[in-house]
Length: 346
Image 1 (tube, rainbow, N blue to C red):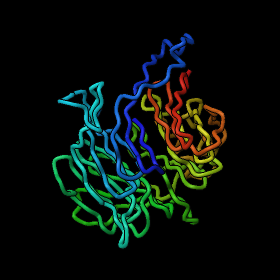
Image 2 (image 1 turned 180 degrees about the horizontal axis):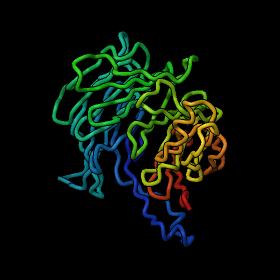
Image 3 (image 1 turned 45 degrees about the vertical axis):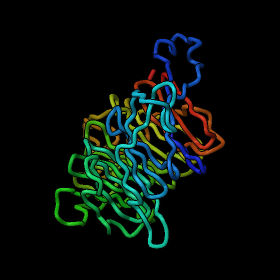
């Protein structure tokens, strides 16, 4: 699934790339096959983010401040419409929340969406957080004064907790069960107010997040009791566009940036057993050095022993997005091309 931006005719497109792992490992000619376009949905505004609510429903964040939920199906009823082609693939609009994020004099951009069950969280440059539900035409809850600056990224930490990152380098946690409109905690990247552009959640430990900022820094956070990140890595020369933990092997992390880099961070060789706290500097550092479940909280080891690998030659234009599935990485950027990088964990 791809979305376009900076075009009068933006669209969400569904693609099929019929390449299996055996073909790639055996250097089959299918490795060079082009993806096949299966369907197109005409989208109002730039597509800022796409998130699957389930395998059949995708949620779109728009630069005009709207949020749209689309069902993907192969039901062809009558003649094909503009969002349905002769192959039978169809985009059906099952929910749209117009102009959820707006400024006083103009439409504001919806910068990010996150999905959990039937609930959708969205944030925008108006500093608002909106919670919507597929069964409701209006938002089920709005935090109109969530922040005084643009919110760049949102995700569900748990079913009842969300995290939102802003342009001042703050990561705020919200308990959606609470009757108050104030965050339960605020985490701070640094005193320099560097914008956080993207956030990813550890797949097995919900209290561990990784964020990417406009100065190219990757920050690892432990939300249990820390206001500041545990580990900071100077990753990219320019703003970090997106981050992903590998879902089955979270010791592997992937990131891309506006300067055209796609990096693989391999933390699997980091020893998680610290026998002597004095080996790791401050008491605060030594406490996390012994966290056997997550090497990313071992600050000194990450800085000195994590293995990094460039997955592609640096692109001349920004790389905006990556996605990880199994042993393959899908890459998309401003050059309007998609790249499938296989065998990243071999």
